[in-house]
Length: 400
Ligand code: PMT
Image (cartoon, rainbow, N blue to C red; front, side):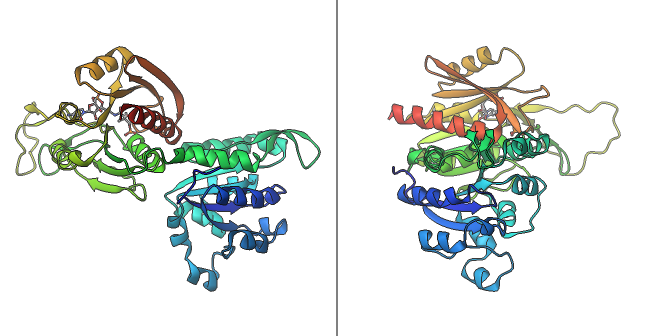
């Protein structure tokens, strides 16, 4: 199997009998072309020695958070940044509980806090421990934060019982890693994206804005990057840190976002507009803070440029994907937008409800493209972004 060439995978090994399979997993990932570094928890070392992984990987195995010799080789922050993917296999119940609570009491849990890369869990534990509400609760918290979970499998367990909790076999985990990176289906493809909201100033302290947090757009930027794309993300104000290994440009207003997109659009192959751009801005921005001495204050608003429509109307437009935020008749209005703006694809979502849309950790989408549709049900935005990125890549590649 190939498909992980140039991918840097940090294999985290926690304490469980499935540790012995991690050595086979390491070999499978290497054979698929990945570069590996291994981090073991103290409990993992009770099952398999670091020497096994050192011999197989050809690199020192990282075990200690505060070991000066290891920190000198590559400190834990550099290690967290080095990885394209952090794969915890096996992920024990204890480890999941610790990271669900944000603990950083060994090297591996600290790395999970310090990395901006995708963290994937491959759980392995007794079936009762897996089904225990505490473990399931921890899992849900981690999924909501963007972690992925591959497995577990069902079947006979080391303890002699049978049920869910077996770690996925190394070949299956390796296959998941290959699909995660999409075989580099967007290698060398330039993707330009917008995300977040825009702020349209009223005076030096107030603005017209909206509730977009940037979560959907940032997750999609990360997934497009994971498929091999060179991503430039133009983002309105957000508290989110830019995903690693992309070009991040921060803007404030719709006009700034418009100018930045127009500056970069000529060199892009795919344009994805996730931003909730303010459709209107105040026609005048007061130089000083407006005093509240009137009962009624009227703001005059003027139209902002429609960035997405302008890109799609270019003489040689990139493959153009829009989003549609609707409160009713979602598919109908989204399809109307897709046709009117001549988009290659549109991703429609419901906003204004309790679940999904703005700010939420989860979302659901209806994807529409020429004579086709696909529904992606409610799931963590990180997972949804992965599915959407795969579909965009497939349709883009079919269009060239
Ligand atoms: O950021 P989150 O909190 O995670 O929330 C995600 C989201 C709900 C913001 C996202 O999933 C979403 O729906 N983004 C599009 C929001 C929007 O503005 O939709 P719209 O239907 O009003 O606009 C249609 C399309 O035109 C969008 O692709 C938008 O980026 C684009 N547009 C709109 C106006 C404008 N002046 N310029 C644009 O480019």
